Amino acid sequence: MKDKREWLTSLVIDFIATTPANLMGDAFGDEKMFDKPLVKFASGADKLYEQFKDPQICAEQHWTPLEAFSEFFPEDISISPDELTIISWILPQTEKTKESMRKEIKGTQYPSERWARVRYFGEPVNDLLRIHIVEKLKEGGIKACAPVLHPEWCRLSDNIPRVIASKWSERHTAYTAGHGTFGLCDALITEIGKAHRTGSVIMKLKLPISLRSYTGIYDYCLHYSKGTCGICADNCMYDAISREKGHDKKKCSDFLHGKSPAYIKEHYGFDFYCCGFCQVDVPCESRIPGTTWQ
Image (cartoon, rainbow, N blue to C red):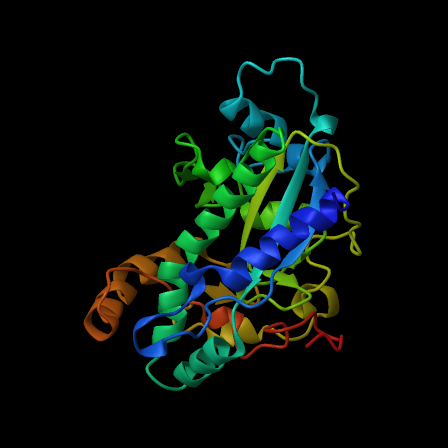
């Protein structure tokens, strides 16, 4: 067998390239929802996971990898965090989807159909990928789990400073794995920018981890690192992002669950909510600002 990291990376890439679930469907036919994924690995013993329990970052209830793994395998009482590795992936939005959203910033000021479809139909693809990786590891005799698929995983919204958090943050795991850092709008800026979805699986298998090329949580954001930009705030028509206060999750949620579902239902024919204007038509849409990533 090839190196296990190479094997796991190819599993993620091949699944997204070949699964019919990754097709837009309807009027968009065989157009794919996600481009070629990025894949990295983090240690279950990374001390960042303890920091994520800080209510100012995530929430006290946020799982460490060991806590999440133990939810699935409570009988494995002797396991230690350094026996666990997390595979984390980024599923990039396509150029056509990003282009369609850029047009709507000065157009309807509502999500494009492509963007809404990827948000609605794309996350189930992400779930299928999680299940696929867990099953392939299981076939090899390796215990594995996808934290967000556990019945106890949930979003947290009561009496926490971050307003909305969860028991396992895919973005913070991607940050831990070296994919990228956060921006003014809270999106994760990666090699392919911040227009993407992300997912992860924890496995009882010790693998070499990916290195982080940053030290700070906002290193790739021009607003925080250089005192410039802030264009994502300009793109937000609902005053949910500001240069002074960052991302107001309450205002963001009010739009997402207030105005967007009716528009999407009327114009695209399915019941869902989304936005995403902070992720397009910005210097970090498709690359790390200041780099030549395409």
